[in-house]
Length: 66
Image (cartoon, rainbow, N blue to C red; front, side):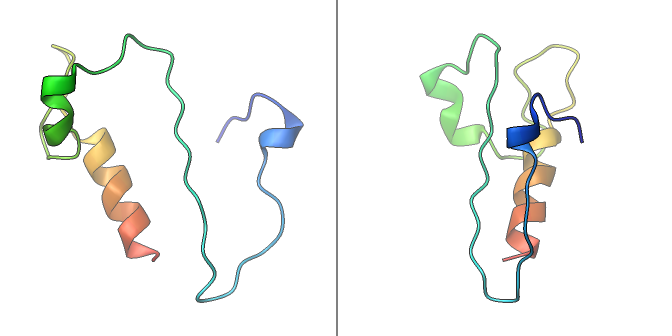
């Protein structure tokens, strides 16, 4: 993973049952409001060349480590 600054690098350790926060920042044009409900559906893409798996995989990963 690439971090923009040293301060962004995660530090410390976690134990089972600990809570965490996932923050995502983007610099693109955003997603139209009428498409937000489909945001985490597999194969939903806003880019013509996209396959629509990125956020679906990210969501599954986060829920797996809950």
